[in-house]
Amino acid sequence: MPSVPPEKPTTTILTENLTKVYTMGRIEVPAVRGISIEVRRGEFVAIVGPSGSGKSTLFYLLGGLTRATQGRVVIDGVDFGSLSDAQRTRLRKHRIGFVFQKFNLLPTLTAMDNIEIAYTISGRRDPLDVKYLDHLSDLLSIRGRLRHRPAELSGGEQQRIAIARALISRPAIVLADEPTGNLDTENSDAVLQMLVRSNRELGQTTLMITHNPEAAAVAGRVLTMRDGQIVGEESGGRAIPVRPAAD
Image (cartoon, rainbow, N blue to C red; front, side, top):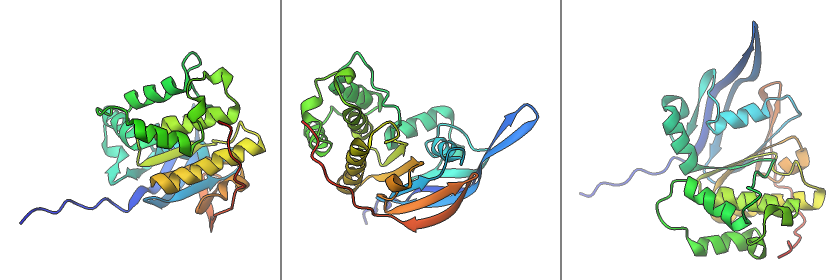
């Protein structure tokens, strides 16, 4: 009888009693205090809170960019704490796409080059799927901007390129840290719309960190963070005005 492959876990991100304490001399500064959350596959979850609430520290813990003082982070059934540094790096490259507030595009390269480099770094051995890139370009309304360098693009266009860079390797998870923090209202709405569409159409699990409750409300679920703890949860789903992006 042929073996049946195991089903993918429905929980993509799991934290249990997650704690991070920074030591400054003799002083211990708790940034994250015993957080336990569960994000299911395909969800769009936002974590909102004021500056100093521990959001960015939580982001770095979830992305495996820093180690927890206590508790654990489990990504697709794999405990980050059980991995070596090399294994953590490999898991990040293969499973997680990062979108940051700063676009971090290489200024001397075109948008296309920036996306292709991200694909190469991801470690994928198969050639870049041109049809998928075309689909992604249409989804993010950047097809006509791929041959431009960052200095020739607006802030909104640069952030959409950064999103394409995060999605090009088809990661299971997208982690976005203040992705609209450097944008005006119109461009913020456009980027949020793109994150919602990519979550729905590409089936990726999306977790967004933001200080802006209005931005957070586009997610299906909103967690409120304060003083290193999750202090509230509510449903999101705010509609965003759909504005066609410039080609």
